[in-house]
Image (cartoon, rainbow, N blue to C red; front, side, top):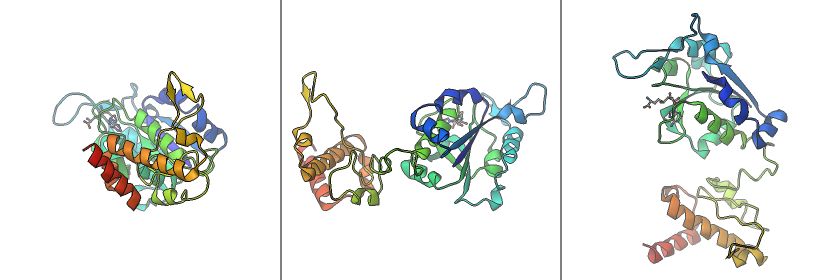
Length: 269
Ligand code: SAM
């Protein structure tokens, strides 16, 4: 899979893609990331990328010409003929649809993704109309630029590519996992993380067995797979109810899950 990132701060990415899984994916040629300096696509002596907003108001706006020319230089298919199953040009924007694990799964199916990083007050809207397929936001807050968002999208997406994680199941069996991922872990020894069905992951423990007076839940050392699975599921449900109750509306819940949640609501209304 190939990502192209268009930015006025290319150096921002020097270190961010050079560690851990991301680095291994690049070295192993599972992932290609190309960074493009927006100023290369200007035509004036000052390499101007921004200008004042029409209609007045504070700040500056990224001009359309350099961004459109930068996208065109990448030889992605022009917007009207673009195959949404192969390529996507994405504008990072606080006004975009919120990035979720489901979005990352969609992107991981593509061959090519181009990410446009805004700055200042944002990007001339015609860029969006002319070359972008979608606007994505990484959360309900305003950042000073799209670079962090671009890095988040690359990271969340690339770990879902086949072969990127050492253990093929690692990405399937964690927070926000899909329904089929969850049911795949119905039998046998519990996996290191077992599927969530759209809820949060459960708490993890490793050695030492006692740390600063805190032990590890006894069930995890008992070797009873069914009991471990049940404990993990209940912890995940409890944590989701506490931290992200909104996820429960769309989660894949069994009758036992629902009964457990009802019981929790009774104990801690
Ligand atoms: N005026 C814009 C607004 O209120 O929506 C904010 C512009 S922001 C200061 C500059 C750039 O940062 C945006 O063009 C976008 O590329 C990026 N950005 C800001 N917040 C973001 C978010 N939550 N997700 C993704 N990108 C974001």
